[in-house]
Amino acid sequence: MTYDPDGDPAAFDPTDPDMVNAWLNDPVVNALHEDLGRQFRALPPEQQLAKLLPELENAQALYDHLAGTVAGAPADDPRRFLLITMGDQVESIRARINELGSSA
Image 1 (cartoon, rainbow, N blue to C red):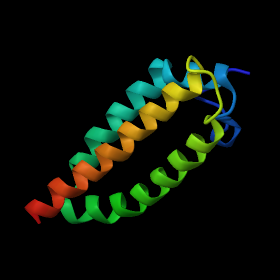
Image 2: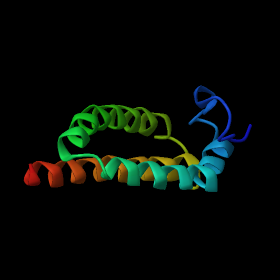
Image 3: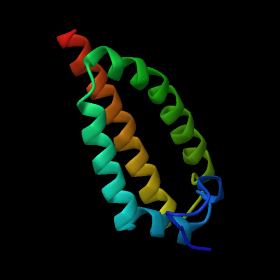
Image 4: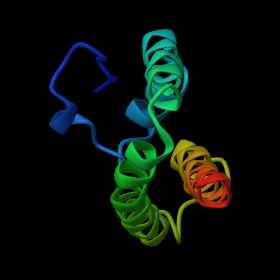
């Protein structure tokens, strides 16, 4: 199965290497993330913080779950690339919270 950006988000299976690879390389998904990021950064800092704090908790939980799932997978398993991307996202959320906290 491959990833369909117009399909049901619940159908995304992070344990399916083909789906993970398709998600990582999907231009629609990448453009959507960029658009949503711009809209979010335009919000006042207080609103951003209110949304980022629970998002950090959720992102960390998903990262931890996927890390456990791919622990024994081969080094070239596409899910490992997803794990790296998710780790980068967790760190980006933390960095943004720190930026907003210092400006608030």
